[in-house]
Image (cartoon, rainbow, N blue to C red; front, side, top):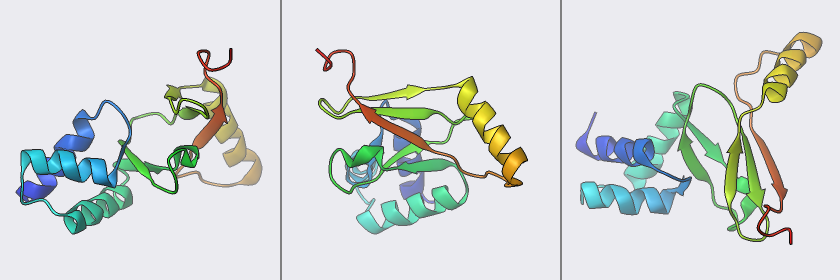
Length: 126
């Protein structure tokens, strides 16, 4: 693994929010100024294929961009506020049960599942 890929991985692993490729590039360059845009995209593609990160649309709140996050042990729901843009993550036993039911009833093996919900957070509802 190259030093550039290590810098990209460190950025993703330590991120406190969902990052797009430009943000990952900027933060990785702060760790290793030799990181370039093509290395970021190739590394993101590799990490997606290996199942280590998820690529998210996040309701396209900021255009057509994609965001990335480290894949955790459990799938979770992303709730996006359509007014302020806040993203809230929610882990749900009901979501897990639905996936189990889909696999059983539809005879379908789920490898990837994502659920994004758009609405208004408590602060923007009023």
